[in-house]
Length: 396
Image (cartoon, rainbow, N blue to C red; front, side):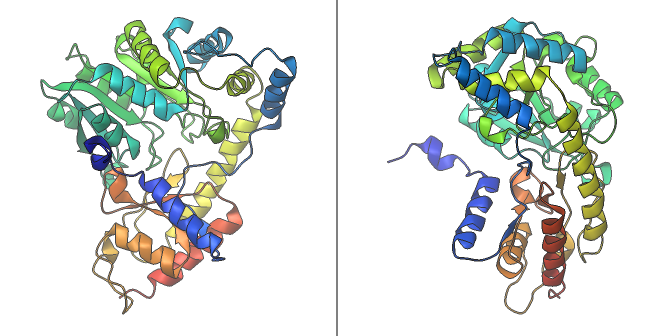
């Protein structure tokens, strides 16, 4: 028998929907998948070449240090300082097998049973499951579409209790594409400063896919560096999802705790992936900027197309590569065969009738929305939304 832990753990909705799409594709059905948060670009060639060079050197086949090679951690420390105005030394960096492991390490390191974590919602699907895995309690604080899905400082203040141990948010946000401004984060920081024992977990994995012209890190605000864990990684901005390189900058005590946990679970990240990450962080960011420019062009295209779909209400995301439209106007409608009771039904309906794979917003904390990834070709995006529009038109 499996443990209660596994029984109670939700399956990742994004991976589940991707699996259903794959099953249909294997049957010869032309499914367009807009469900996964995965860049459709290849890892830039100079990063690939860096990995090949590391293999050819023949020096990187042994176990690396659990928290990552020193030169990579030094490069991350320098990146934090130069790009984010964050002062983390190399000893405060832990390199992990993706940002997901980084976040799991943090929760396992700081949570005791019953401790609460305030989660800015909508949120990335794994936050709540990882909190519960560490025997904590996720406390969801919701930002609606009218506020670009952003939680306010006053909402945060109202959610904090004596059991609150941490706060977690992403900016740019998965699933909404929203970006917190420095002013908004400063207001949030002022709330946090009133509580001595609360840690802020800032997930900045989409940092480079930001259309506002200015990325803000809460840890750079005066008085916040010693109570902030900054999470980042190589997956999104460098199209390195499969390389599995994530990292944190954290207060020393917490970095040591995460290192201890990781040492018992996986040990270090792959040696060659780390060498590729070092190249990515210390060389040309040109390919990353070009990818971001392409995502911006796609965002504008998708916004125009979605505005033509009846029952879809979309704001304008300012980062990442997602739309998170409110589709509640379609609830209760039917094509004569299927009744759309909720966003789950709509996603299954669109997979069946339009052969487009999307993800229900319920998994991200908003039951009225669905998530659409535009990390896909323009051709696929145009075709997918054309199919969606036609399928939705049959609902009345």
